Length: 472
Figure 1: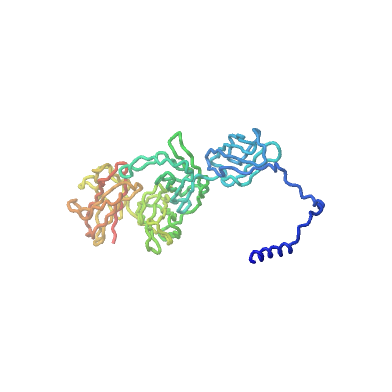
Figure 2: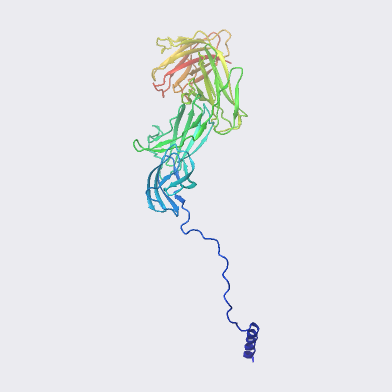
């Protein structure tokens, strides 16, 4: 009974569908469709590989096309600054092209133009990129009279920098023999370190450096095998005028970013004077105010002192400059520079030997400046006699060696008049040029000031000026 019920259901289904009929007559054709595209297509440039190149490099690229019939007569153009030195037809739709990219070629995206003589040039727009092999970052004020820290990162991984060097960094300086940094008009360069893919150096623009674009190209490798890393117009040097400082008017400006600097200028009045400079920070929290003091040349490498305070003996009206840079890498405060001028008597170190305490140079009055003194060798000693006045009791003698040669290495001491008893000092010899302040002096009393060479003295650095005065 179960099988019969199942078959009966199937019969009901067949009956419901009905029997299949005979095929009908063929219908009329439909309307014709739109014409299809040509099997060959419109010739065009379809791609390039690789898609980028560095300045100053030679490169082989493959230019591919669609529906092209390229031949030996086909020419290729990559735009200004790129010389196509060879074109080889690999197939009607592929060209092997050799490029020579000039060091000063315009950077950015390029069009590729292929001309085969069979019609209009075929152009693929903006597909090929030209750029510098260096990624340049710089910190500091990019302006005249400044100090700029530069990091040049090598993007050409197939061509590392030549980090060959001599020296050990302790007894002899490290010199990177196969790296040449950019030669710029009015901008000195100081190399700090070289790795295969990174170079750190300083740009030191003079106060009078010409403002404008800076080309920061690096040459790497031994003579005859150098590789250029062009970076044309990598940064822009701005013009800036020094902030004038006078005894009555201190100078100030905001030190906005870490590494920034402020440029101050001072023009002395006529006559011999002692000038004391003091750098300051407002507010002073965590700041380390200091300045590089520069002569009339305005060259940063000519600086004769880097300190928070500095004394000079000046007898000309030549300008001087102070490049304020925080010594601890702090910013966000007002950088200040103040100065005080003191008129002084002057003399020139006597031509006769004064290396004997019994025959010192005599300084007739205080304050006093001795110009043009020298230490001839490590055993040289210079003596100068000073005498206090009747009203000077309780004041102190301050003795300073100053001058434009920051490497003259001196020590100073103050003795009794006969040179038998040490009154003050010797100075700590912690720096090159030295300063020493005594205890209270007696009225109408003579003292001997001694200046002698440090045990680290170098005969290449021997001139100094001497400043002697009484202070509270």
